[in-house]
Amino acid sequence: MQAGSLLPELVLIGLLAATLFHAIRLERALGVLRRDRAMLEQLVSGFNAATHDAQIGVDRLRAAADGAGRELAAQIEHAKGLRQDMEFLAQRGEAVADRMEVGLRASRPSATARQPENASAGEQPRSTAERDLLRVLRAARA
Image (tube, one colour):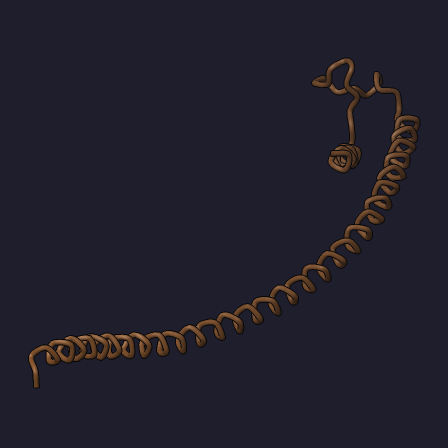
């Protein structure tokens, strides 16, 4: 063999060796990519399942909130009716108390005849029942 034909063959062998070296490195890199791809597919699958579960949870939460909102609205309407009833009863109670006070004052003997010594001139003596009634009425107005 001639030395002139040996040089291109050595260059070709060197290039083939470099190609083989890069092919082995590429094969290893592709193996890593295949393994990473499988892991990525599992990750995406898990993410999809979690997203689906979250959507179901949101739907259930929305339904529960809607039901609670409707129930709360019904209770508010019922409470408004009760409030109106209570206002009516309070007005009626005040009217009855006023009539009772007028009746008590009319049935009471003259204040000057039996006014205690410790009472001031402008203050009228009151019975325990009358003081309790006035205290309850004042509390109901507050």
